[in-house]
Image (cartoon, rainbow, N blue to C red):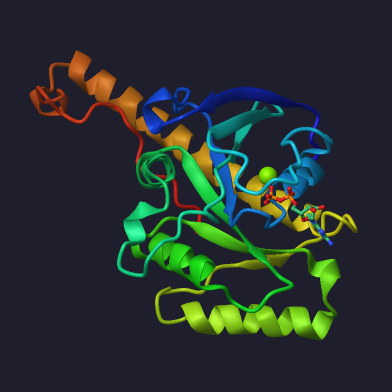
Length: 240
Ligand SMILES: Nc1nc2c(ncn2[C@@H]2O[C@H](COP(=O)(O)OP(=O)(O)O)[C@@H](O)[C@H]2O)c(=O)[nH]1
Ligand SMILES: [Mg+2]
């Protein structure tokens, strides 16, 4: 995918104040200092898209960027300072929880994991939380340049082994280095594939709606929307 435009759209403190749900969204999240801002800048080709901050925990808002006028890149607050106890998994961040659980146009979460470290409890808990809710996600191991390939692979294998019990199907795994400019193509390919699926889904929804309208016009009472029905929210897009 060629990124021809990346434009800041919004900063929202909660789900209610997020923009409309008309465009497929891809969310990036990880522990503070995992390299999220660096990766977003690298992916978008804009050096200052997400400000690279030396101060961990800097971003508290749900930040959205419109890419190529076609999809949104969503920069979610890091979870490094939530101090989540094992039994309090719902408390990462209310806005993030709300967004991840209830955003119908969320296509995929890119869960960023520091590839230079062995599995960290907070990352494992977050991935368990995603898997519990069947939220579609892939794992992105960052800072691949900091360790040798064997150590990186060992960290990835240990992580996969730790989550194997929670995930029905193991998620796709990617490795990247914003410093050495590696891993961009594979991540953008994930988005490309998901966009095609999302657009197919949207076209099918459109056809269904057009058929319903036609049969309603023909006087078919069964196709009329029930009062108080759930409206026109599309089904959650699940490309994998
Ligand atoms: N070696 C290396 N350092 C990185 C990489 N990505 C980010 N960093 C460094 O990690 C620190 C945190 O990066 P940042 O992008 O601000 O992380 P964020 O807190 O997750 O947004 C900064 O000092 C970055 O320079 C990478 O791919 N390789
Ligand atoms: Mg950052």
